[in-house]
Every structure is written in structure tokens, then in C-alpha cells.
Length: 373
Image (cartoon, rainbow, N blue to C red; front, side):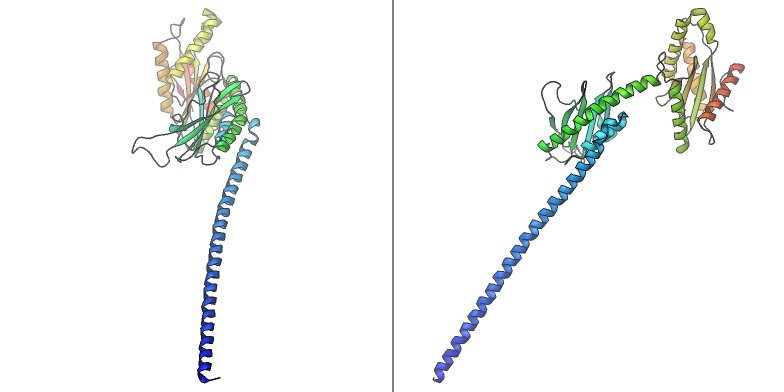
């Protein structure tokens, strides 16, 4: 082989090696790109699966919490607890930021409980609910705001379903969302209706129990709290005042010579006098004060956040009111009072005993109410 031929063969070999190297590099790049794309797709799928798994775990936790909340609802008779559990369960639904339940007592007065809504806003969002007998399964609502008045936590959408007890409609249950894109889909509505089915009879029972309890705590003649309720209330208020280091005053009021009213006018007139005195006491007392009938012609007023001087001032207003507007059939009605303010070492019994001792001294003295010793 000539030298030229050898040179050409060597050049051809170099060209072939170069082509093979280029082809190999391209193949490696293609392989690396395919692997990179595959890894990217796997990463995207893993992220999606992770999100789905996280959502599934959250939903499962919400479902579990909802079941725990509703599980023993039928055994609870305290109305406040039943309402609290109901709104707590409803608030776990997906996308829901607040819940509200509205019911009515036998006298028509509304009972409203909410979660996630400010107290003053609860009545604002207490919608009328689905029309009775109209066949409506639910009412879906959206909220529009004037420009500039909308806030980040503003309610944007809601859903309302009826609450039914064994004897008929009880009220309605509503949920609200802050997202304008939220909609109560079939899953949310089904879960909300399931909560309502559990809550309706429980609320009905709790309302009935509360009505019975109120009757048991109420004096039939005057409508005031009776002796049993007075004992429970004074114990509770004393414990609260001591816990928060607040003032508390107790007034015991006795009608002077009430037996003479019964003797002269009869028992029916005597009962009417007691009922009118109870009305005057409630008129003069503040909204926070608790007025009770703890004996035949004896009344008690529990004054939270009040001093001895506050108690004396209240009793003076009671006397003035009865002098200005005496009960029918009685030209003048005398009152005696014993007033005691809670001391650091007091319990309910010692506070009552000091007020009772002051009442005895006041009846003997007749110069006005006596302070507790």
C-alpha cells in the first residue's frame, strides 16, 4: 500500500471515529434530556399526589372530628352545648369559615349560636332559612358589598338548610365562606344535611329540657327565680366574684306586716300584692341583677359588680317606686332590707347569713335598711 493510500485510510478512520463520538454525545444528551423530562414528570406527579394525600388526610381529620362532635349529640340536653357542637361540626366542612344555627323557643324568642362570626354579626347573618313546605332543599346565598366596604374576612357565600325535630321545624343551619368562588356542591350539601338530621332532634330535646328546667326554677306566682334557683345563682355568683376579684352585693327584702294584708283582704289579694311587688323589683333592678323570691313575702336581689352603697341606692329606689305606685288594694306597703357586700373570706352561706342578720336588725329598727355586719 502506498503512502498516500495509508494517509487516506487514516483520515477516513479519524472521520469515522469523530462521527461516532458526535453521535454518541448526541445520544447521551438525548438520553439525559429524556431522563430529566421523566424526572420532572415524576416530580410533578409526586407533588400532585402529595397535595391529594394532604387534602385527603385533612378531609379525613375533619370527618373524624365531625363524627366525634356529633357522636353523642343525642345524649346532651344542655342547649348551649348542643348548639355549640352543631356549629362546630358544620364549620369543619370544606371551604367553610363560619357556621350559624338559629332556633326558636316555645314562646317564639330566637336562640342563635355561631362560630367564626363576631357576636354582633350573628344576628346579621341569621337568615330566614328555606321556605317551610316549599320543597326547597337548601338556600344558597352570595353577598355583595359596596365599593371600599369589603374586608378580607368578609363573608362572600353561604348555604342554609332546615333543621327539623320529631314534632316539626326547629330552625335552620347555615354555613359561610370567605372565598367568592366557594359553592355548596353536592358533597357539602349532603354533609350539611347529615349534620342537620342529627342536630334537629337534639336541639328540640334541649329546648324542651330548658323549658322544663326554667319552669322548675321559676316561682309560679311572681315569675321570679324561686328559692332553689336563688341558692344555685348565689353560689355561682360568689364563686365568679371571688375568682375575678369583683364586687358582689346581696339584698334581702321583706314586706312589713304582710300577714295583715292577707287577714284584711284575703289570700287572693295577698297573692296579687306579691306579684305587683315582684314587678316593681324587676322594673328597678338592672339587667345584670338577679331578682328572686326566696320565701313567702321575702325577696332577694343579687347585684354583680356592686358595692354596699349601690345596694342601698337600689333599695331606696325600690321604696320610692312602691310609694309612688303602691300595689292595688294597699294604700301603703312597708319594706325592710338587709344588705351585705361580699368579703374576701365569704362563701355563699356566710354572705347570706350576714344579709339575713342585717334584715332582722332592720325589721327591729324600722329606720331603713341595715348593713351586713
